[in-house]
Image (cartoon, rainbow, N blue to C red; front, side, top):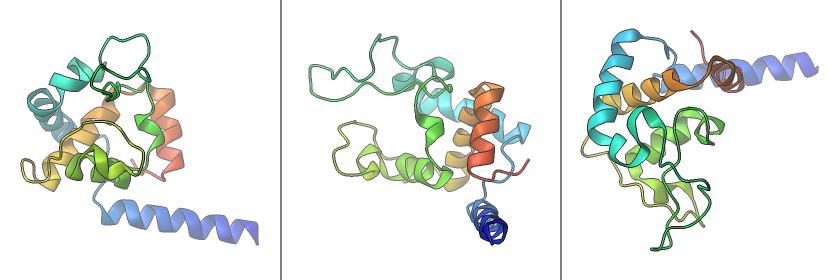
Length: 144
């Protein structure tokens, strides 16, 4: 019975990933497009190649009470979040993350198409160490 439940869960996750268009994380053309879009829209806050601000403690609030932007290169928590949540945060801004979030990421829904936002996510995914990618891809049933 557990195998049937697990299979249903995996198939549901795969169907959802296909529905949101995030099944091919290794598409080189999308990654290159994402890299250029990242440089123009994200690097100012998240640093070149997603290294984030070079702060010893990201959880230390800035003087304005906001948290530092996280590194996106696999060294911070970004890879813990499902693709649909990451897509929502990029589109609707950091405050869409939920109650208690005290970041300051702007929304990009009007500035970038869904395809462009997905290309950025594919680029960010490409920055992660192979071990992190493997864990993420298995956790969220990402197909290659």
